[in-house]
Image (cartoon, rainbow, N blue to C red; front, side, top):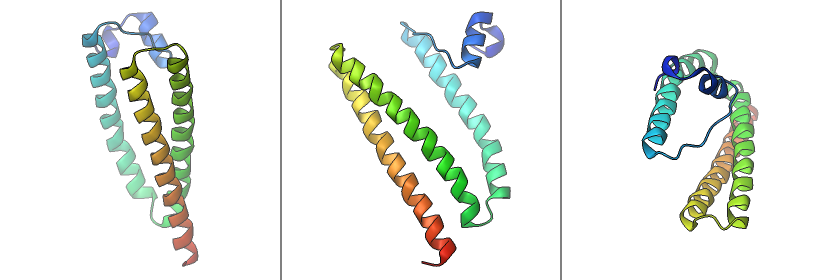
Length: 126
């Protein structure tokens, strides 16, 4: 469902980052599709800006640090969800997926930290 067709409260909730739960997999699929389309639409702008702006390794570094910080915060939030799911004995499949997401998130933060190290090393010639 497009943003224009959503009820006002749902649009406001999306705007402020509030999410509601969906018990219908069709609604979940629609939301996931919309998120993906929005991300790819915005990615074109990001790529164009990044290409114009990131002319050397040190201009890349602050952007990577910003992304790493946001990813780390999200991964830690996911860890809280995982702890809650475990404590409430929620379905094992949910716990497994959350564990996978947390593990991959931590791997991503390590890769981003390595990227930041590389930018610093190349800037100093080491």
